[in-house]
Amino acid sequence: MTEHPSDTTRQGAATPRREPTVPDLPPDVTPARVRTFVRRGRLSTLTRDRVERLAPARALPEGPFDAALTFGRTAPVVLEIGCGHGHAAIAYAAAFPEHDIVAMDVHTPGLARMLADADQAGVPNLRVEIGDAVLFLEDRAADDAFDAVHLFFPDPWRKKKHTKRRFVSPANLDTVARVLKPGGHVLIATDQDYYAQHVLAEVSGHPRFEARRVERPSWRPRAGFEAKGIAAGRTINELRLDLV
Image (cartoon, rainbow, N blue to C red):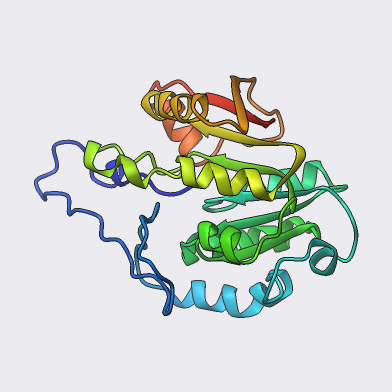
């Protein structure tokens, strides 16, 4: 659940909002590509401590992603992209102990908090990856690696000049289709109607997915951006993209 740039400054504040800056790609990654996130903030002592203590036990092994090696069993595997503080990922892991889930985000403070909450929840079927999901999918995920992908409350990139940074794009849909197993699906939730319309428009022109509106999953907690959206009177759009 990546932070919405438009939510970071209260309406009417005297200090003008600074344009988000896009981080550099890792060394040797070419060509430069459009990124769907921005990095924010410095790491506190608490964040560093949580990462140092808790991340090793839940980190993915280096190299190509191997679910059986990672989790020590063969089971359905879900990837959550932009997991934020991890409320949804932890809830899914607890609700479906027979499944495994990989939660990814670029924002270390949120993941550090998730590591602490996951440790307290005692969910052995959750792993965490700090990094860019697109690079992970392109470079480390094999074909048919995941049974489902979750994308809850992604950054909507409100401004017209930033729409190209939205995660749901033809190129990313191609990549997600490749890593999904036959019969796989993508769950998307957003409190921004225009982003839901963007998703439906992108999927309508894609040969590998069919989109439909669905009911809210009962296992997902009403926290983070969902709670903020409801408090603001916005509709929560629930979409499912089925691989065809």
